[in-house]
Image (tube, rainbow, N blue to C red; front, side, top):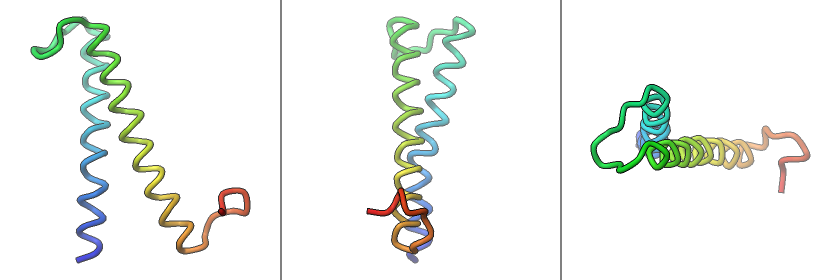
Length: 77
């Protein structure tokens, strides 16, 4: 059950990061999606989604590895 919860916790930021990549790609091809009024807003939100999604994923992995004790000295608390 614990692994399923961890998978779901990681799935949500992964989907968010993938949507952010899609937003940035659509902006580069000048395709404006419906809820966004301008291309620069669409690109900015895509960048924020990617950074938050990857950042959450990296923080989750770092926290898990700290608990296991498998990180190097400089990443330990």
